[in-house]
Image (cartoon, rainbow, N blue to C red; front, side, top):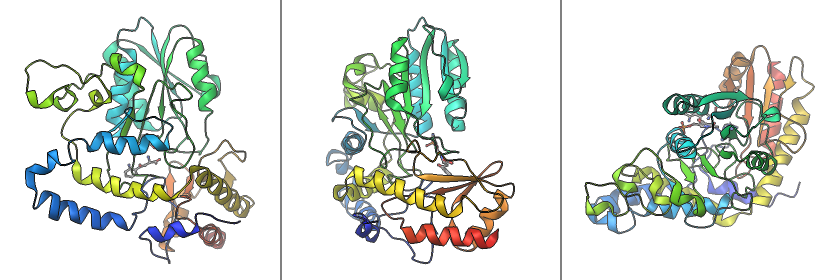
Length: 373
Ligand SMILES: Cc1ncc(COP(=O)(O)O)c(C=O)c1O
Ligand SMILES: Nc1ccccc1C(=O)C[C@H](N)C(=O)O
């Protein structure tokens, strides 16, 4: 395949003897990040000290949020970087059900655990019912307040139809919250165009922000005035430095902020996002599909292997394989420098990050797996 992204791998700090197929759990570091973090520590923090808060730090959550917004189809002023995905899910779900007279929250039955746990807490706190349902049979009703869906399933790699499911929710007057952890930065996403109500996602996977880098939350302009989230920390205040005793939320997306942002991680993420200045998401998607198709073709007939990831285009950028000995096999693959991961009970996951993974990575991973089997 003609690979217009081949040169982008050089922007990453990766060992050539390692086949890294776990960028859907922790993205690899762009080379520029280390120098940027050093500058932030040595210069911004070290020399400028507290003055740095008014020299770009305070607004970093909104500024970096806009950079992510560009990758997920959100116009400026609608994405803020803050907290973890879990915390942002809590804000989003609580805000979505505030003042509702509807009775249930629906969550994708196979969701990543944290989404299900948080949805359970929100249901308990608000007195709504929680109904887990498979995405192909959500059975939304006029009693459904909100539905929480993972754009790409972490276990199988299945991609949901955001347009169709958002429309389904809206048809019964329900809201939809999308978890974009496994799709932000690798799939073209059009949140504004699809009229998505709320979305959240992490930045340490395909956005390469680094371990524990802060998550993001999308609140569209029209929903901001009624986005009443319960974590009313001072940084979401309209005038934080007035230090008022009354909480007045910021009129815009900053009302989703809570406490002091983690600047070191935030600015590491900012540096990592520079990679996107050089790429077109359509190329990223095309390469992700090609890499996963190639890998699939090499492994699907291996003994004892069942491919869980859909073979059509309704898939993200991972290939999940079921094998009864998945845990042992992954440990042995990692011993041989092929790094994917194992998800219980019997799933081998191979994530392909089109910015740095190569077709040779797919070949080497498949050959090693074949030898082990
Ligand atoms: C779909 C999904 N949601 C949420 C999370 C994690 O949330 P948090 O960033 O709060 O750890 C992950 C992965 O860790 C995930 O895959
Ligand atoms: N945040 C992490 C910290 C440590 C180890 C893994 C993670 C993951 O992100 C797992 C990922 N969400 C997954 O899809 O399995």
